[in-house]
Length: 342
Image (cartoon, rainbow, N blue to C red):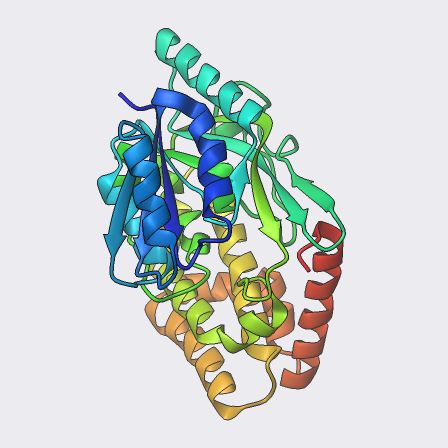
């Protein structure tokens, strides 16, 4: 059995796909590498086929019509045969020594019959412009290098949420969660890092810097000019998160998990508001923003009350539109400087 299935959603990735795949190949026969060619128009398909021919027991090339990042993740999840499932974007890569440590840890847990539902590792923002890095670790939220449950998980603050780059789900539980990502949509990683969590009862935080997130391309989703124009896609993702669990369902979860789920919703809602407000005062932006709030109010009044009374979005919601946009954009730029997002 393959220990890890790595899914690489790839669209026009010829310039960086090889580096990504080469780092994953260090896992040897314990890993499965699924290169999902999402209707690329460059040499991505040929590169995927080349790797599959050279490493037929490890690499699988999957060719499909373009459906966006979420569609690629969905297809990878369907095809995966590994015990665990992890997404690696085609312009990112993994640290080879950290991957070895992760695989050794999985083998140890298999021998001890203590396999967790979820592995969490650190990730690094690698900033191309000035060769600096920022590491996101989780030692303040999770016990380090030991198995735990949500009962032992600490608090998250501000914009701090779990991101896809840190998560590796047990494949069977990910499928059981029925986490289907919307197609032709950016920012689906927000949903991917939220919907499956209640099914992950046991957690192991391995304190290694596994994932390297490349920052530096102009077309990246975290670029301010891009998220401003893609606000409608973030609205779509936020609606998926609202629909995933009702307030009543969240309220029945263990206290630390309940606290995190509500915190995550609040943080992503704040991002969603920023996407809308930072692009100006066009009527369609304001209408789409207000329609989301109204949707939450109508479908889940208790969740609406939570988001409008006990969270940061509540404070921002009542600011004038222009001021709100300026405040949120300023905050995002400060965050970008801190974690080297751009």
